[in-house]
Amino acid sequence: MKEIDWSKLGFHYTEPDYIVRAGYHDGVWEEPYATKDKFLHLHVSATCLQYGQEAFEGLKAFRGVDGKIRIFRWRDNARRMAQSAKGLFMAPVPEELFGKAIRLALEKNMDFVPPYGTGATLYFRPLLIGTTPRLGVGPGRDFEFIVIPSPIGPYYPGKFHCTTFIVNRYVDRAAPYGTGQFKVGGNYASSFRATEAAHAMGCDCIFLDAKQHKFIDECSAANFIGIKGNEYLTPKSSAILPSITNDSLMILAREMGLKVTRRRIRLEELADMSEAAACGTAAVISPMNKVVDTEKGITYSFGDEPGPVLSRLYHALKDIQYGRAEDKHHWCEIVDQ
Ligand SMILES: Cc1ncc(COP(=O)(O)O)c(C=O)c1O
Image (tube, rainbow, N blue to C red):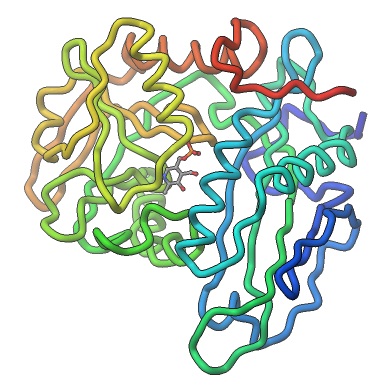
């Protein structure tokens, strides 16, 4: 085990021993290989640098209560990355190659898998970039797939708590027929103006639909969930990333007897909700205590403690990830050690 003070790990990058790489040239993917070199020898005119031809993913491995390591729903990340690749005219990484690369990254960095009970996990950042040099605007033909592992601390180092969200009307994250449904760098760089402004106030932000600024699209880099009576509500929009956490929570919510509805959600409907949250791999669920609409002078309040329905869902999913509850849906791949 590495000399890492797991309790002090924040939610940021810690250098692993190895990363994993595989190149794509002349229509063929290389076998993934591990390397200690964290630098790329990249042409200055590579399409990822010139035109933002890149996509990424984020997933985690958990050390369970039984000491076993579980990788959560990696096939879904592989499929989503293939969609992002198609969206940006890149060669999709075959699912089996994606899985092999994740397993190799884990195997080569076993010492970086945090022990059970620390709340820390091993995060994987798969990355796909266009490497063909091009000055004429257009996609490349060569690609590099990289998996960067890093241990990360728990999102909530203390107890599960609430965050305030600010409604943003100044920056559109993604257009209705744009790239919001893909996990590509451009979506994030373009939203920094809004997310950084919110962070400066100790908050996160809510993005509205870009066409009318009427409906909730996403929350910073996470999906939105609201609880209204016995209903789990989440936005339907062509501009949002299909969150794997949200998909898992919807399945668990149905099993708990909630009605799950995916539809357009007007911002004002927050007034009828008893609980609201952002959801994603990083935190599972980030409950909202308040949503502040500064322009309209309205504050939607949900209480300062996480509500009962979202708390139950949060613990139900974490229990599966840490092997404390039965994995009925086969979401976790247990890795031989
Ligand atoms: C824009 C955006 N929405 C939603 C999510 C949540 O997706 P997931 O649950 O697959 O992490 C993420 C994080 O990956 C994201 O970046």
